Amino acid sequence: MYMERFLKKMLDILLNFDGYLNECDTEIIRKDLTFLRVVIDSICIENMDEWIAETVRSGAIFGFVMEYQISTFEPSCKPLKDRFKANAKNYSNKVITFNHKRVFKMDPNNKLWNLWKSQYAKFWLYLQLNVPGKFSKKQLAYCEVPLFQLLYVPFGVSRSFMIVGKGFTGSILLRIELGSHIKSLMERLDIIRNSVSGAIYQRRNQKSYNVQSTEFNNRIKEQRHLQSNCFCPSNLSPVQNSPSTSTADVHLMSPQPDSYTVTLTVHSARRLPVATDSWNPAPPATYVSVVANSNRVLCSQVCKSSYEPEFNWSEKFQISKKRRNLVVKLWQKLAYADQVLGFVSIPLPPMYAGRTEYEMSNLMTALETPFISISLDIVREDESQDVNGEVGGAQALITPSNKSSTAESPSIRLSREELSEKLKKNLNELQMLLEELRT
Image (cartoon, rainbow, N blue to C red):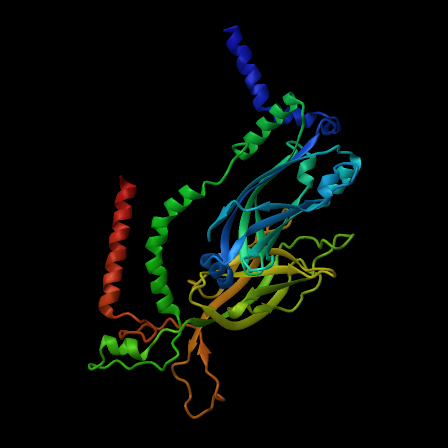
């Protein structure tokens, strides 16, 4: 009985060692840290432009390379001053696997701790092109990891970070942590890290995730195809319904275009972080950008010195039917190089019209998450376009109306029988899902 109480007490002390370490002098613990470990697990690809995706599918690449650099002083850790490379073990259009691990021997001091309070570990993702006769690479994305988390218990960071670039968006799972050759200290730090992250060597199981989501993706694929057919504009004048008009004639007279026109309006943003290039706390100068067809980058005007900028920027451009999301980035205007504060990914085609407030993916170390208000509407060719030229020869585009009609809409490319079959199929799938939930 006494032994059981003693073991239970020791287990409680080990599990709650975070509080004991926080009460200790952090300076004493830092003196026992003797190495730095960097582990790069994998990158989950969320969005790629058409050129990158086609290059990966065609096999015209040699591979992916990750380069990283951590700020340091030469007496503390001389090897860290150089850039290090990690080649991808394997890759696909969904995930890039690195499984890279490297340990650096170091002798930390107070200068290094003060440096890491404001510095970042930088990661660059490159695409190696398979060019005969020479080595060529293209930068795809960039990521920064704040180092101030290494200064306190458990002296490490282990989670996913957003890695973004022009035409590329993903999340990188990595781990940067300090360690010691003192076995007892490492065991206690591992207990804390295990309780925080759930597992010391926690990794994303992409295979199981893909298997579970394949069935769901197949179910919504037809619905997305139907939505794109219903929302995409027509480049032809509306076809009048008549008893002699057949379904085949409607398909011949109304071919589907490869792209459609949208109107993007960025109204405002709020809860922005403090400017990073200012010694004194100051609001940032910001602007927004979006990528249209043919990788054409559209940017708004710069709103200077405001935590709640009012952009009121509107732009009309073409979007390919193959695109499934539209990424709007919020930039901070800097003297040396602009920096991405956050971004939001809007599914395509848009299901809701009007002004909507989105929570942005925060790429900074701000405590509050920024929000941005955006309107994204699909525009169509005016069915009542003036033939006499009163419009000035331009095509009049309007937003979709909510008028009900008993006749078939000219924008829908499916016949009444095809729509009825698809609706019955979706209802049957919904009924099957409900039966599975009940059981």
